[in-house]
Image (cartoon, rainbow over all chains, first blue to last red; front, top):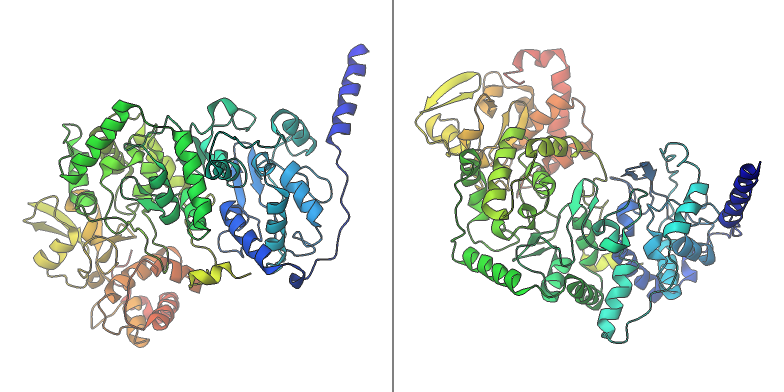
Length: 445
Length: 164
């Protein structure tokens, strides 16, 4: 009896804590009620937040949502954030929008799944939320009703999210660090907030929350591994602020290679936001990576020198893989032709010192699609010409020659899995729907 | 000596295992439809079909081909009995300089084998990786649709060639 009473109290308290009121619907505000400069700023912020990537279905209209996002718990469909009155956020006031960003609650008062990374967006300032709202509310309204999420009971009950928030949503504001530069603090604000870098680069616990104790220690996104971007970074050459800036800006760096997978979208979005924002992100992240210890720094310099003089040591391992590499890959990857048109020397690639072969398998299978109208890297995919066993032999060889780490286990299985999931998932490698060809046009409200 | 199966026949060629398939097709077997464009797998002019899939023959060394079957444009049809894809490209006059066209036809053929009625979007996405500096893109689109139609009608059944 006492137990039942306690359960009722707990349930009652949970409901009380979980309940959020609706916020009155508004008539969709007309586009000319928003300040043009605010809209432009919102466009840059939406690019930094990578909003369009999840809120746009492959081949769909920007921000109309309905992209199936696979999670370990089931599939969550992204919502339509165009100002359509019925299926989008057309009836949301700015207050309702800000509450969604800050507390993960929709206008009607329903808890939103944390696939929408409000654990980061909670740190976005009122001012930036206002700009984002202005930008989104001035897009073309599109009538798209997102599919129902596919989640098992009891995860399909939104009350469960209230419990998750109780455990993992920290709404305490980010305090600026007065001992650091304004640029560093700006970077921290963007990285921890809107840019939500940790959403992919921080490992998650069994309840799907980022593990605070392992921040930036490497996670996963859409069947790609998101490398550690802290002191544990597996990059052969340690990252610094200048390299990070160039990479985030251009999508590639001569000492590191090319952004691909979901990161390709991130850098495409960052390619035309203001310089100082990308610079701030690079400055903060360089500090997160930290200065490399002397041996790691020396090792990086050694690799760069070997690459420059074309003297990366050979390996005795894997004759089959070596033969495939020499006949198929080396003609681009060992010519010293500069990026983005030449292939990066694989001694510089993080893919082969990473903890598993997944990214390497993905890239060999699918290659890199060039971005229309831009100076961008390109690589043919080999899914049709190489068998799983051939790719596995190649990757084992590349790991031994360039990874300087113990062999990966079960590479052929990794390749088989990569082949299966190649055509599903977020399809993030596809170009956006009808992007304006003139870069300057993209900023037009 | 290496053995390669091309257009239904085994060929013995005097080549090293690291030789690109494209070189063997053109230099040893006198099959000149596949073209050398960039040699780096970036332009699509060298595309052939291997086991039903479009493959860039310039970045496909012989050592990858064990047990596989190569089809080139010559294997689809001839001047006397053109395959649907060849007829369609002729009827739509889809070639201008023509250098990229053999590669385009091979990828289109592979597409149609897996997807007999592709949409405009599907054709564009599939052929996007083929570089062409002439101006027949709309005709190429029409030709692929026409080939799809021809493949489904009886009058083309006699000129299917060795399509897989």
